[in-house]
Amino acid sequence: MKNFILVVLVALVLFSCKNEDIESCDKEEAKQSTKNFDMYEMSEMASLMEQMYKDNEILKERIKKGDTIGKFPNHFLKIHSSVMTDEQENDAFFKAQANHFIRSQELIYEDPKNAKEHFNSGIDACIQCHEVKCGGPIPRIKKLYIK
Image (cartoon, rainbow, N blue to C red; front, side, top):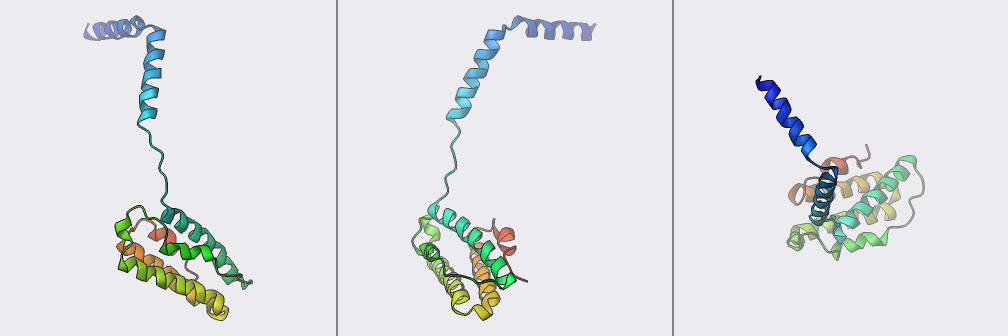
């Protein structure tokens, strides 16, 4: 008997709603959900780091294959001036690690015979910085090492 009453109540609720009411409710919910949706925008620094990662993936393959390395990518120097998500993160520690990274990268192009060591030294600088600042990308950065 209880089950019969429950089934009747559910049926009444379902059949009492008009299709138009359901559609208008759906449209209203959709409007509200899009109002609350904010698109994530990368900071200049995050965007630069993504670009440096891609550049280093290519450089890694060139070094491994013994190909010509090319020229130092000058946009790496923007690491000193790019706006960070949190400007307080741009402290003395970050600046020191950035300098270490840049110097290691420059050495790859100046001393191609030891490119692998210089490359891995630059990756070390990235990891050391991210261990203190933002640990999220560390597993991804470690994939750049040349073994």
